[in-house]
Amino acid sequence: MANILNYLPYLETDEMAFLQGIFQNMNDQQAQQFADIYRARRKTPELILFTTLLGFVGFAGVQRFVIGSIGMGILYFFTAGLCFIGTIIDAINYRRMAFDYNIKEAQKVQIMVISQMGGPYSGQN
Image (cartoon, rainbow, N blue to C red):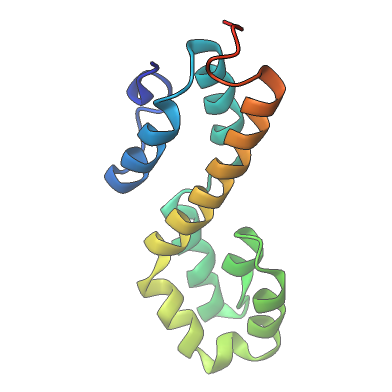
């Protein structure tokens, strides 16, 4: 059983708790591959906050593009962040937006790692 702190020590508490459940059934090789891929895909809350704040200076919706919500990004862009209301809400909820995005990415990476390397009890180490 791999310890998440060995691979991703900078995570916030709620994200770490979720990922510990994923790491629970991984061997060291799977955990290392997961950490490498996840680290590249993960979005920090600070990045989401920064891109959200760009909405107040004329670049509304960038945060939505960053998290893969293209439709909402286009809507925010053409409506000035839904008249700044959506941008304000996103500025308040930036940590939740980052967490939700990262959880979805973690689940995708988990599926990819397990399918590439076999299940945790497949005999591959």
